[in-house]
Length: 193
Image 1 (cartoon, rainbow, N blue to C red):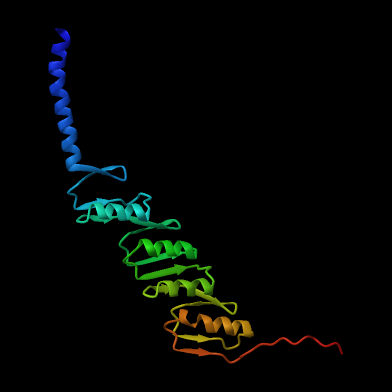
Image 2: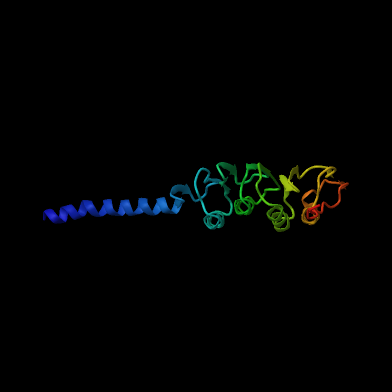
């Protein structure tokens, strides 16, 4: 008899508990370990390491929600909706990843750049709508990419320098002129007298 009484009060508790759990999961879900209302207007994922794939999955699960996230480049974090960012010396791969994860990004400023002109050209070709601002190293000189004129007066240039300069000209979209007075520096072998 005692067992039957125990079952009578336990059964309504279990039913109530199952109903509460059902209601909870009908109204809420887990997003990256956080309880989120299924009708949420905004889902804030900032401050968390989240993959591109996971972000796209969350956006597809909540098409009407505004998803907030951030992207880390080096030691700095940027809002996922940034249109312009400035980073200090990042690799070409880091920049590619950031550009891919920041769909609204239009301007990228890179300070203290150690990227080669070849890497810079590859990025500008890969992301033609992006405005890059960085220093370009040519013929032993460091030149900002936003200059309006290139002047190599007094700089001895080798054939290799000229070839590199010619290839790098697209990096200087604002440059209207290039001044070369010392065209080619050819070192002749020294002759014994």
